Length: 308
Image (tube, rainbow, N blue to C red; front, side, top):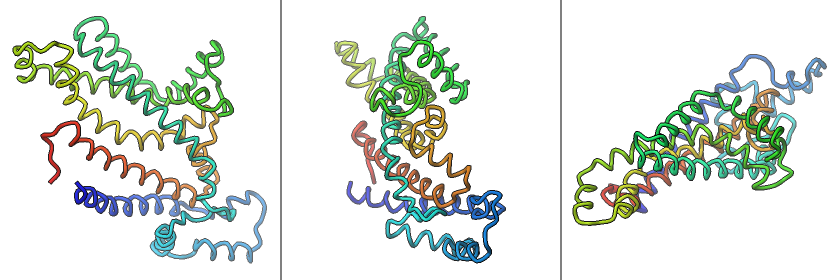
């Protein structure tokens, strides 16, 4: 297992390099001068402009700029913003908010998605199954920003069940409604995935054999069928953890949460390329670690899976 984990970590290196280079290229290939863009309509003295270009390697070729960034990344330096503030220092005050939001949404996806999927599968063709299928289809069809504004208006403003803006209430009060909005698509997908996987396993031969041996139905479902049915769900949930961190941009903007998503949104508006690239690098690392965790959990959920 140790060699398998080491090999997977090595596979993550080219993924990290390719992704960071792609994002770095997309950010810094945009036309216009980001330094002049920060100044707005105010003129920047040529000497100051030249010094800032030299400091941030803006006049160097694209590959040279990327290797400068990569060299700093190997020492744990995510770079500096155009105002001179370290990107890592900017993230230090915000990653807790995004982490709380992402984990809240992930837990809601796991509990609600798996619960609804199992409930629908065990009542196939009944009103419960039809309700889950119709509800998840509706959630998937509606964009997340519309779900966010509707939830904010109905559950926050009119009913007053949750705060509608900011993180002053702390966890979990200020994070339940944004977490539910962020998890809405994932809950729908996990529910449908869990339902389909459980229905497929309920038709397997080993389920009929277990029933013929006299095992109780709930024991067959919980100890045998559900365990095998969770393998595709775990795959999705592992990758989804990184997706939730990236998807927090819209949710944090709607609910005015001072997290990484809001930071990226502001950085894109201000054309703060180093901040966008630094945050993206952090998210790619989260993706790689989540995929590694999924691969390790495979062997725990199904002993038939062997890591060669």
